[in-house]
Image (cartoon, rainbow, N blue to C red):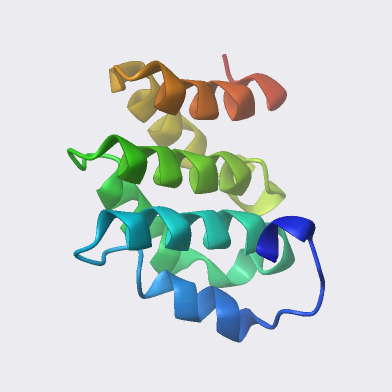
Length: 117
């Protein structure tokens, strides 16, 4: 539902998903990250807690968890609020350290779009 860009969802859904980014379950981490990524453009001022959790998950041993974080962070750094912050360099550093190509490609798309690589 969040992937369809329906404006029916309030920020409550964002905050609901946010609490599962650091879940013990990798599927929950991935899906919560996707929801945050899909809703980020609608609530750019409400992402601080989610960004912190997403950054933590970039070092997770699970590829699906890192992919979910990359998916969300890719969308977040394209937002003006984050594009003009230190987040771009942080994501670039994560991109350079990432070894899994599917995860790396998520970051690469955003970095190319904002002309950071």
